[in-house]
Length: 413
Image (cartoon, rainbow, N blue to C red; front, side):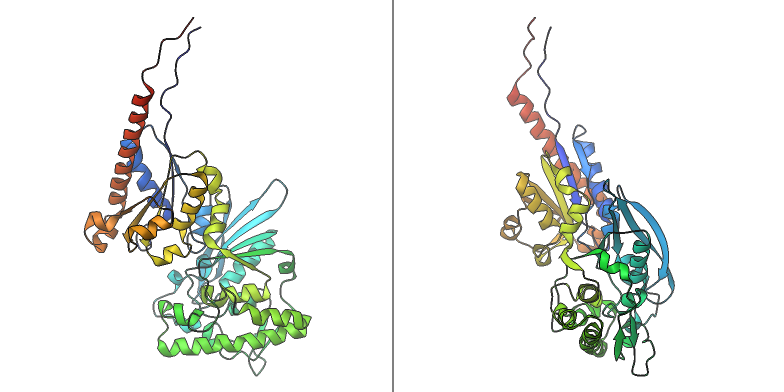
């Protein structure tokens, strides 16, 4: 019986980008690059894996294989808002949930003229409670894109914590309300929290207060002026001993000391202090967001056997080196010996910097478009162009491999 030699192996490309903020979502970036590759290298196998760093887009990245349901919650400015929740139950019966803060308490949901000092995280607590109602054993709390600087007060209130002023009344929402916090009662904190593993996914490693704290670093991005930043920072500082005292009354000195230490932990300043509330009172653990998302999307398994990995984000800069998506993806690729190309809107890193991070080549849309504005406006077309050029290189390598292999010899009877 005759046998024939196998044809050239099909190239496999994994596309795992973050969002291009202000331009395209991670899924749109992946689709545009994939379109260009398929056009110029029609034989290539392209695997699209939209990514996130634990902030906005985490739920979208994890959506494949998850049940997505919508809930009505309190938005950051107090108006009703629609927020999605991700759920998945494994073969062993463990139910995992993804609660993305930006869905319920995101800056994009602040209405025109809304007061940033009154922005609340209450909706995030309501979404977390919905996850508990659905039987969640494990919750990924994705922090990023928040409107609030309330130290997680709204979230805690939604979970049963009573936060009171000097007159024994519940404090109003936001940093403005937190400034009047005089006492807290933890006795009605949802008891299911104690049986639930909560993981904070965040790329922010700021403490709660101080020069690198929640209000100082991120307050201006949420609309706080200089005086409001100072007020919010003081409110966050004063909340720590009040909550520590409440923890002491509830469970003794061990929990009280934990609350005090939590304020200085990396990630406590994430999402306007929601990180602190989760670490201090919900028993949460903090992990780098990109690592959590890579596990949610099973990136390492999907990357196995690939010839090339493409990653990227809007701006490739020094913050990227601190653990954003491109560097996280490059680290996984390095373990498998797969070359990595980063595609970005603009690159502020030199060759030595991105090469040290494990990236083999960088394509910046601004270099093709001539300006930041033009690269944003034409992002889909430019990404397809870059994908096309990458596809051409893949096709050329495939032809080279075929030439080196030589023609198939005749089979033998």
